[in-house]
Structure formats: structure tokens, C-alpha cells
Length: 228
Image 1 (spheres, rainbow, N blue to C red):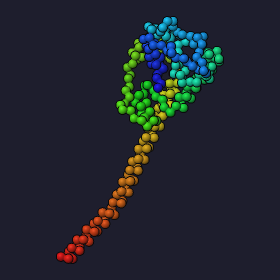
Image 2: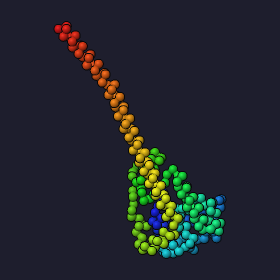
Image 3: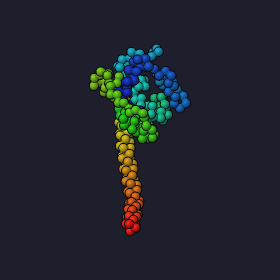
Image 4: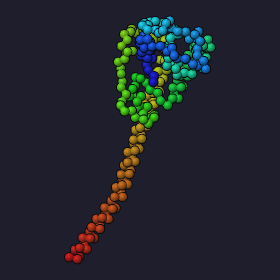
């Protein structure tokens, strides 16, 4: 499941602000975890409770930035968490392309902002039916954050890779949805056509029997008349 990068970033900030951490995450890549120098922490102590949005954005090591690209991409292509492995622009280009390729090769992915379409694609892809329809929640903790346009722009800049990935994902998602809808309509048309054909054949077989029955009744009546 992918989400609008700004909303996702704000949601993670609120989550961390309430005391959430990822201390148990090993961030394994090429068989090892990153060193403290490769992946420094943004805070001291047990957690980052009460962190302001400004502090959250100011930490250059914050894994919340471009999280969706990083978690979809093959990090071994760029030396994992070793930022000295290659220059930043080349690293970003490789990560983004890797994330796009991996997303495209998945049988299914959904978008938080399109719950009903996500459900439809899941059910069509895996031939499964959910008991109840997905619910679209447009009011979330992220949507309740009061921020100016400058802050939104800063978040978009911090997540510029995720922004590009999300636009690609949305386009690919809607293409898959439209294709599935067209495929479903075509299947239904063929089904109705086959039903009409079977109905015509059934009627064609039924008419000779009805005519034969009428002939039999007429002959029987005529024989009775002759006997009378």
C-alpha cells in the first residue's frame, strides 16, 4: 500500500511524537546492518516523544524522508546505507528507478487514497471477495495538522523521490484499474452472448417437439371423429 507522501510523512511524525520507535529494525542490507556512522539516530534517549514538526524535518538522517522509495528499492544497488558509495544524484536516480521497477513487477499494489479501487483490484487479482467494502477515511491525524504552504513545500522537498514514485504509482494503478474494468465488461458481454446463444438453441429444439405434439393431438381427434 502506498500513500500520498505528504500525508504519510505527517502521519509518521505524529506516530513518533507519541513515542513510537523502530529500535528493533535491523535495516539488513547485503547481509549486515548499517554502522552507527552510516545511520546515526535523530534523538538521544528511549524515544523521540514530543518532537516538533520542525525538529522532525531538520534531522537529515530521518528515515521518514523518502521512506516509500527506500523500502521498495534494492538498496544493494547503491551500497546500502553507505552514502560515500556514489554521489547523491546518481544514488537517488538508481533508487527511484529500482523502486518503480519493483512496484511494476508486483502482481498487486494499492493506494490509500483509493480504497474502493484498491479493493476491486485485489479481488480481481487474487479471485477473492472481502466480506465488507473498504472504507475511505478522508479525515486522519495527518489531515488535521495545521500547516502553512511553506511547510508543505518543505515536506515535498524532503520527500522528492517519494513524490515522483507516487505520481508513477498513481498512473500505473489507474491504468491497471481501467484495464481490469474493460476486461470485466468484455467477459460479461461474452457471457451474455453465450447465454443468448444457448437460449436460441433451446427454443429451436423445443419448437419441433411442440409441432409434433400438435400433430399427434390432431390425428387422435380425427380418429375419434371417424369412430363416432
